[in-house]
Image (tube, rainbow, N blue to C red):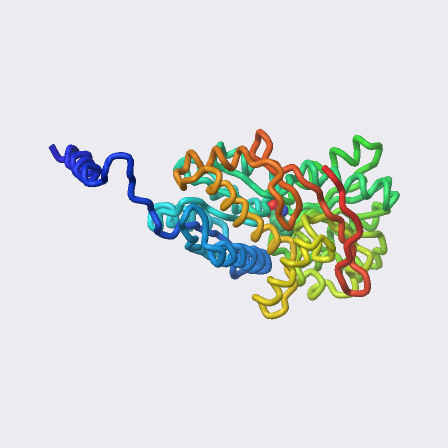
Length: 378
Ligand code: PHE
């Protein structure tokens, strides 16, 4: 008899609402966010969180959507393996969030994605570029490009603009992002006639890269591709210069953080990396965002993660608005149907694999600063 209770109660409640009228839900829409606010990649989490928060605040200041404001519930995974999965479960079962935003790092998004999928809670990664993230299923989306594209962009840049024919690749084997980007770079560089003269490995958290760099130096390469995160990339650059390696170093979006320059200093001069956005973009929408972000966060200039975090908030709001509800299946369908969504990181169209097709930006380090070099269309 027990299980009859619930349907009977709901039927009784339904009877109280006059025919043709349903009581509108005006409670805030709970959105879960998972970010590395502390720990090794705190720069990623702090930036994406600030961007997401600013987006949510702006949406709320404008009255919210479908008659409801947003309530952002943020969980810090401390940059630690395993914590993102715990946070996702907590946000879904305890907080009953309508959607999940996060993570930046691909390895951590790979923890969240299967949980979002099996719970049927739409998930949007602002910045994870490894293709496997969205392969977890129909509820998993991202607002950034993926690494087969980013790898191609940097392989072509190395060949056509740095005029490199023989390079070294130094991969972090404990990062899904690094392993993937390394693979896609190599495939394209070799397909275009280039040679990968030597491959070396490291793990997240390593501090000494001298033996790998000594081997790379002996191989006599024209450049070194370092598809890793900023802490290790900066140490690699420093130790490479100390060992007398003058060949240009270049990497991907994992380099993007002010800490890259703080750790690596002058050894970063003349290096290059691909990313998602530049605050130097003169588009009024981008400059408006930069100004509002600076006003909100003590003059800080938003980086790519901040911009992607901001876009992820509006991207979700746009889908909920089109869906007219936070019902997960409807939001999922609306997210999948997103076409030419305009954000501060460009125009996002969601493809059949729930990835975004959009342009990349190449940045160089000059006189101790990040400098926009060019935009590469998909
Ligand atoms: N793309 C990286 C990853 O998938 C994360 C990242 C995004 C880092 C944007 C910096 C800027 O792990």
